[in-house]
Image (tube, rainbow, N blue to C red; front, side, top):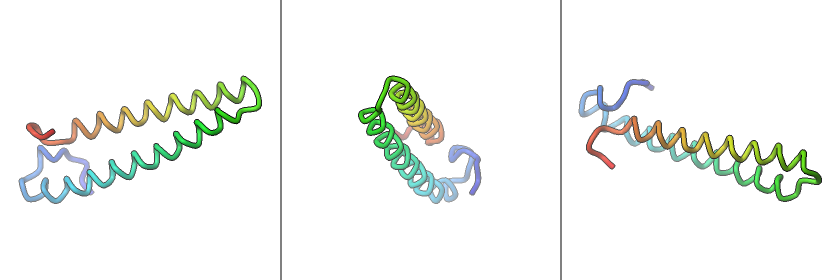
Length: 82
């Protein structure tokens, strides 16, 4: 798989790469969502403040990762698409 931007590829290559990229972003968001749900459960069931703090850090990190993935997707889309 090429790491070049779809904007830099020919029209045919970009149209083939775009669905694959969308699928990868969808899969990444699903996986991050699962990690987030588990971290939230761990936070809710934490026996003490130290465990809650660790769980909260994981939650913040996953949310940051989700934001980063969203930004990468936005930047990888050809100009003019939403």
